[in-house]
Image (cartoon, rainbow, N blue to C red; front, side):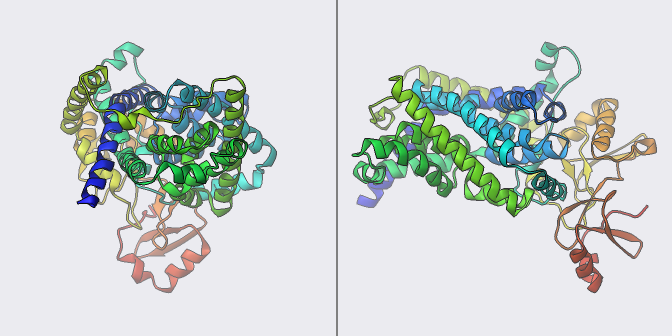
Length: 509
């Protein structure tokens, strides 16, 4: 009975926190979806091309206006890097899109108070400046070139990559007509639920872990761990250990705010909370994605400079707020004692639940479920990839169920929703499809033939290979096979039959 009561107590705390921040989260996701609908990722990439101060400012602004999912942000950063953004600007954009977003500020305001919102904003700007300075002083062109070569291989990092490359932005026509059009309603609903799909695990884990820690770990243990009885040591120790706790929690994005609430209640310093929140981009799963995207050396480099910047930013902001008398001194968090009641929180929660239901209807009836399934599918080795002309996702024609023959070309789609959207106005998306091809340095084919793509899958290791620049190729049974390295080609040549049975590769014609 004691165990059951303990579990129920932890779940109750988790539920109360969810109920308190439900409408801010929904509102933040909605704003992010609107921005993604009216701002094209291609426009973002072109704006972030130069690693100068203007590019730095644009990276911060555009990142702050984008999605808050850490995994999607990492995928978007690589996509922007491959499309021409500088590496420094891509990483700054990634940081801003998870730590300077609107919904994070709202959740902090509800759970911890305005001082933490102000410190998050000021500290976020400070950390971005520190990152930029560290990159300028320590990042060598050779490392960036190595990262670019690794990024171009297109190694699979997470199932959120499809969300990162998806672009349903509407850029033709006046702003208000775009924003209130049926196309925008569809795009907003898709972006909203794609963001939610990318974040629900982290959010759920964050609230459940926070509830368990609040219910089961006594404050005396946390106070001893954070040296709360030694205020001076606490101010230095907390910003250093906060990012380490975040790394080991495996929880990122807005999901780590409930954990920050527990740590603050347990005695971590004000600056320690800020550095803990900043560390969502160096949790162990994301470090592993860095390794796949940019190589092991760059992964360790990003860990080192990010940790240094976030620890220093947390310490400086905490100290500045202490000197100005702005840092709160009461560590008691009232949300642990709150119960749902008929107040503005409940009314807003219910209003946003109704709005989410309407968007869910739009999402389901416009092919959203099929798109989610397409996002979760990993391309097979040897697959010839094409782009969905509507949403920008890469699609394997061998497995895509939806396609259209138009103008002598075959267009493949991730879902029935994208296919029907294309069918209503093919001319609009034919132009977009050709533009995507040019973005990958592939000449437009006569007749708009989209079957010839610049990408193929290395049948040995599964990496994406640029067929125009691939140095290693083999020809078997009328097919051309492309490889990322001499080692993969040698492995294939020793036993071609082992790999030829897999889905077809790029044709030599």
